[in-house]
Length: 237
Image (cartoon, rainbow, N blue to C red; front, side, top):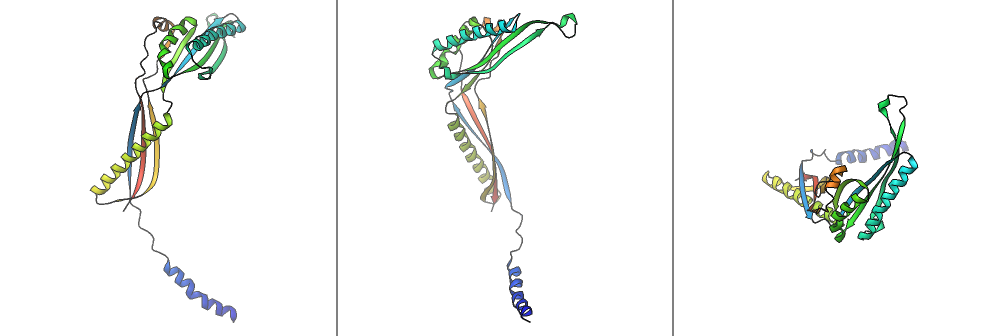
């Protein structure tokens, strides 16, 4: 009897709880916009890729030859005032050279090549010496220059400024569209972003082209531009 009474008493409360639940919300209205922001600055450092390559009859001789040429270039960099911390080795390689013309299997080894790849970061005033370095590096035994990558020491700050501009642009676009269509902006539901940019295109030089360019031609640093793109979805009220 007590159990039945308890059930009768609780039943109205459960019924009331179900009755108080809100009706399902209408489908949320949103607006999706894209914003752009660009910040331009003068690069204050440039990264140069250098390769030294030699070919000799034995692997050990090839390695010694490549090391000797590399050391000559490192001495050149030191004399120009480049700090050792600004030089980074990216690849060291020794490979056999095969003679495929004899049609022998396996093809005979006729020599070995050894290469040292490294990058050099020229900062501030040292950027003015890039042309001189390339000129003298050719004479010292550099085989290839992989490219000139212009950078800014304030990269993060520039990226954040570009993102702020892109966010402001996205909001302004959304406000114009919403007002024109009789709505107003609500909360932000999603945000995505991407960054891109750079300075003058990379320059690839090798062989005779390097020898012809070994007159210390001026290197133009140009302008570094960072662009941010943001995609934002707003609620509409």
